[in-house]
Length: 295
Ligand SMILES: Nc1ncnc2c1ncn2[C@@H]1O[C@H](COP(=O)(O)OP(=O)(O)OP(=O)(O)O)[C@@H](O)[C@H]1O
Image 1 (cartoon, rainbow, N blue to C red):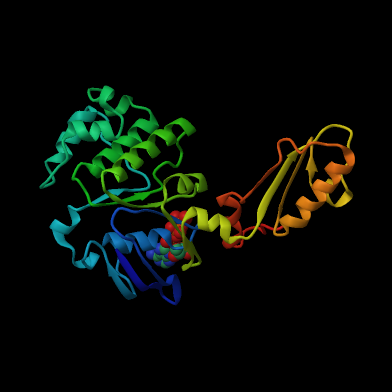
Image 2 (spheres, protein in one colour):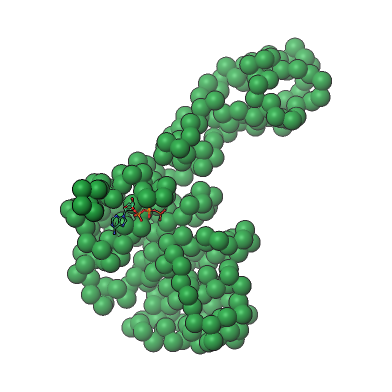
């Protein structure tokens, strides 16, 4: 998939303001960005549901607006919210949808991918929210798509249900499907994505791997559980909450030097000391201008 200097204007307002990126086959890419950043608009253009104002878009080698039926059958969609039929069983609904595609995946295989083999004969209406979301995924993958668009696939699910959804998405990618997903969960992007695209006010402000994104801030986390009754120097003491020192800094060497000197003089072991990159969420908030990362 390639996107070159894409814009989408509503009147004078640029909802998408000149973004370019390429997604090679087989990647999982997460599109992040605050509300109104242009994620849905971009996805709608890539899916062929909306026209670009200017720029070039090619998805599976075609202009999405001119894709046609054969092109569409190579793409799977999971929309932000769907309402499934409640009466049929899981297997019945999958079988019904399989008839719409020229080259459907075997139902048994889809059930395994979405981890609902045991529920094949259960009516959709009696499934949990997380199981229904995995049925959405199953319907999107039944046509054996080369490319899958997932719009906020796990919003509203509990942690266990989210993990099971992630496992299905990982299995599907393992079978070769390219996946483009939007999410507001940074842990989801971290877990699933080979690459993260961050949109802000219609512009692409980051395009990198989660690891590179964490490293890009140049900021490190320092964390140390403290023994009772040994006061820290005042500039470090202001970062103590309860019995823990926790701070982020772009000056990790002086902070560590001060800690080591303090530990040496006070006879304190540095047991439990952690130094590492900030969370993806911290960096994301800094990139999108929501909050500073620095202490
Ligand atoms: N049909 C429209 N007419 C006018 N403005 C629109 C239209 N559709 C979207 N917009 C505006 O374009 C901007 C981008 O919207 P979009 O839905 O793509 O954002 P988003 O990143 O998907 O946000 P969210 O996370 O809330 O789904 C917003 O400011 C929105 O108000």
